[in-house]
Length: 151
Image 1: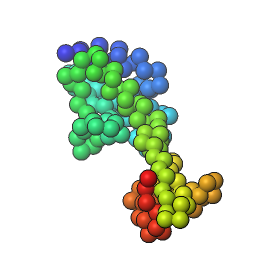
Image 2 (image 1 turned 90 degrees about the horizontal axis):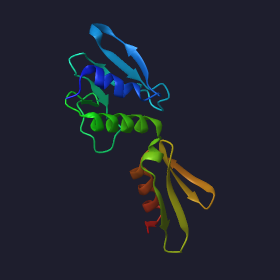
Image 3 (image 1 turned 45 degrees about the vertical axis):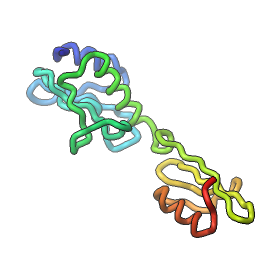
Image 4 (image 1 turned 120 degrees about the vertical axis):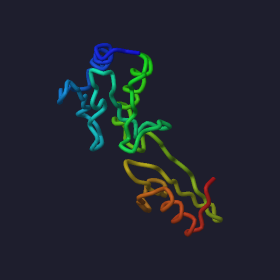
């Protein structure tokens, strides 16, 4: 198991993180360039080796109800990996994390394209925006109601 000092040294390698000492000898590390409200990447790193990394935006990562992953027993490679994934997850929009671009056709052979952009889903007829939706299911429902099927 890594000591507090070893964890601190590894975390400080990530120049995009800003160290923020808090009470009881604990340290937080913030990612100021986060695209989300969440800025804490490392939370409550404690001299007893306990601490947390924000993992809620990392696909497939098991987190507690706060979106955090306990890093007490992490080795050097695991710690570097989860911190990099946390920073990357806060650096990308939902569209960059999970891009969607689908072609939909109707019986007449007309084509529409469904794309994930920023925080929503847009439907295009060539370069003309036909609709903007908050969720994939709303966009797909619209297309189906208009007689389109996904290819």
